[in-house]
Length: 129
Image 1 (tube, rainbow, N blue to C red):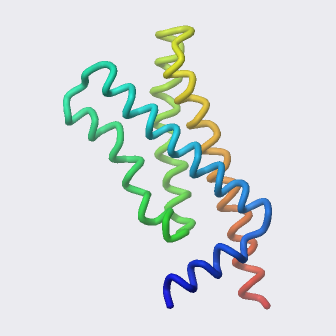
Image 2 (image 1 turned 45 degrees about the vertical axis):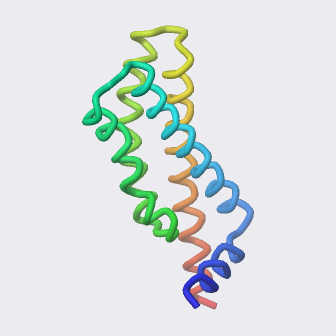
């Protein structure tokens, strides 16, 4: 019953929320892979791997359940990645990895923020009907 309800909820999304939801997930994956590749390339110890990836994985269960609060907190946490990646872009001009990560984090922030806005409107309209 729970899986069926989740499937029906996915079908009720509008075009804007579907698009921003997909963008948020794709940019989350790109940011996660960029952070993992960065830690691997520089041979960072396990605790640094944990510090780079755990904040992203922390919100995964809520995102999978379509909890808007998880997306909101992900936006706040993505600001830490933004600050770190802006510093890296200026420290290593022309390096592809920091530029890819910075692009992913900007898209993640914007798409997650807009997804919360549009999805909350859809859910509010569903409750009214």
